[in-house]
Image (cartoon, rainbow, N blue to C red; front, side, top):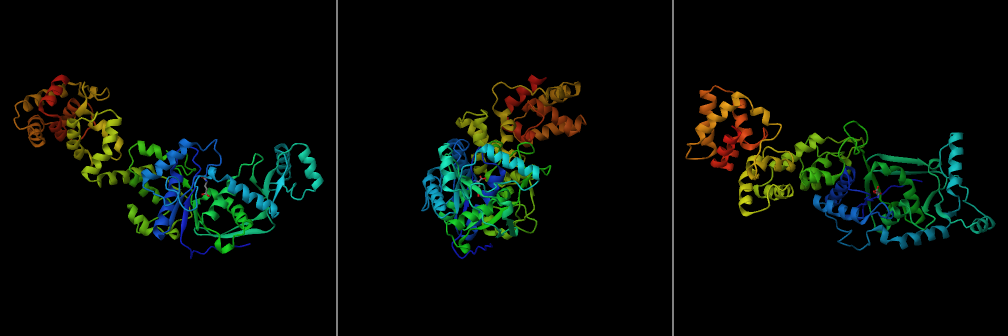
Length: 489
Ligand code: GLU
């Protein structure tokens, strides 16, 4: 059988994760494309939590998923917290719906009770392996007689509900891959409901997509092979082929080593990126490029442009490679593009969380002066606390790894000269500091700037990595700067 979805109906796209941990890069790339497609078409973005496995999908992970989507700015029109006409949007609250459909399928003889035990199923698989034939259910319980059923029941066996897969094949048009066909020889009868009455993914996802009037299923390529089973459920539900949702299976996200992205070859959790100081707009911009492109080799897109430009036709079918360096570069660009006020708002939580400041008025005023001198220089917000620490430390000390760099005779001379020239300065600002140090250390002593200013930098900021030196000294103030230089001496 063959299907061809048409899209004359208002677009309804869903993001349907089963959060068994923090949402990862692949989930969010899917969510972003779902959202962008809905926004591009003026359709609805539905957020559905697939939590039928409540042992693995916990309340905590669900709350974190909601929080992550909100943080990224991927607001939904229907789903948790906002509700909607076709709710509830948590599958665990829809169990009676799945049970009703499963019963209907049994009544229609589209599905049947299967009494095979796991040992018997394993023996079948074993035999299939030995005979080198495709693994899968062998249809043993398809047409049991009432005597056989009675015998199984007398044994106390609890059946699963299995969908009958007719002979033939399923073909559908994937919006990214074109026509995709599955021979049913490789799609055996599959379980809809476990022996304990709980529904399986294939049943719940298909029932919900139909009942929530989903028109487009954009999701990861890993789910491609589940599509013929879902189509089978639509058919059993009596949905006409022209009303099936259209499918678009997004390419895998690979790590740098071309293996599927995992904790092993790259950070995958979005929560990690958030804590590491990546901006939501940078994450969205970068993830948008994983499998899609705005054209003209562009790498910068705003959320607004994404919604204007996003089309499924522009999504490639080949795997996308996750490149941490590129994400970092985009993050730096997005940081530079922030207004001073926005940058302050984003920076503040990082400074307080790292306990660099407690939030007094004087500290806030100094942070506001200091941020502009580092905004150009950082790639992630987590670089801010170590860079600005020198302005706020109560007990100043030079970093252990920078200390040896100023322990030589030359550094001693540099610091002594700097102290001597900076002490009488009456107008303490970055240009007077620079003039004084340049004339003493570069012109008179003939030193290279890196050597001369390097020693002063370590003495004053405690590290060889710091914001621009003269600005840093201006902010720190004359007496603290001089005290630190003389302490180093
Ligand atoms: N809940 C499924 C998952 O997280 C995805 C469902 C779908 O998009 O069809 O893998």
